Image 1 (cartoon, helix red, strand yellow):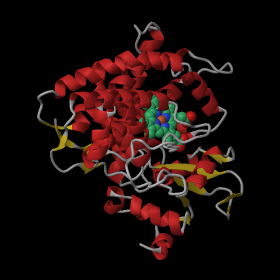
Image 2 (cartoon, helix red, strand yellow):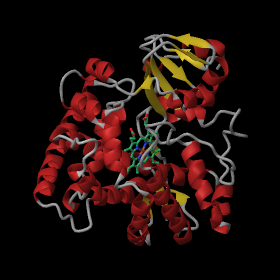
Image 3 (cartoon, rainbow, N blue to C red):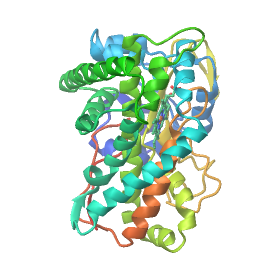
Image 4 (tube, rainbow, N blue to C red):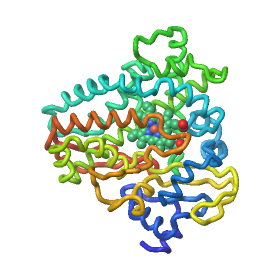
Length: 402
Ligand code: HEM
């Protein structure tokens, strides 16, 4: 790869090789064309400082109404993505975020720790003596699904549907999507919305949730600046939370085990010195960021990396490339659980900084600690499959021998 390849790169025409291993292409872009224009006029940023600056710049907007209208047309996907807080700006974004914040205080999250421990123990009990299993379906997706479902009070019988829904809905956010993917995304929002609508109506009529569903309670009954969320806003933000709460965390778990299998020296380090677990979680997040690409839109003319960028420019931020910028990380392509400092931006920064970062870190810390104690010698049991998505990085399947 060279400068010509960097200049000719088109994020709208990426292939399977990029999805399997985007890092060489990203390194080439970062070196030769870090403020890169795609042929459609959008920007693709790969330098840490530029990506970080975009997230901290209050003139950058998250609203994607125009882009989503073109991509999705009218329908459930459009309604969903334009109503969830992540693709909105203040004041609506502030309202939803403030309501949610009540359920994500450090005290409330600390109270979740015993539940997380209990879920991890029971999932690991199931793995004992199981031989070869797919780690994604047996563990990685189940822990975060159980946790976020508990927080929203989703009944047990619906929980197994969540991953299918979320892959269909989030998959439609990839830069390039087929009609089939759009159809399954629309169907997923419609079906998921119906299910959550019933849950919300039931909760409104029965405010006491028996300890479950604290997030739902904060959203349904909370009020900010004299405003409550409408039924549609509640449904779409609950769908978003369920997706945000488990999809990326599933990838954190699976990417982490994938890395342990690839780097036996680091696996040994954790076995011998479990005090490195927290550092390991940060390094897994940096090295294989579950959300690889973010977006913002310029609301006024601005300057990025020495280039003048017009108002109305659509920006793709490569979180994956920023996290491997050699100006910020020594030996960025090396897995190093003892890395310090580790200023990765997998949860971004600025007003949309991930609300669930502390929860995801708890889940990661508890899961890896117990997993390594119980299974000090996991082995690969076959070829792992990456999810066929550019925006989200994780595994569809990861065969492991326990
Ligand atoms: C490893 C796991 C996770 C990663 C890597 C991750 C990453 C991110 C990122 C990058 C954003 C910002 C997107 C943007 O504005 O462009 C975000 C936002 C968000 N995340 Fe997470 N997330 C994770 C887990 C969670 C969990 C467990 C929850 C909830 C239970 C959660 C809830 C949210 C919410 C509500 C937002 C929207 C914040 C806003 O727009 O103000 N996330 N996440």
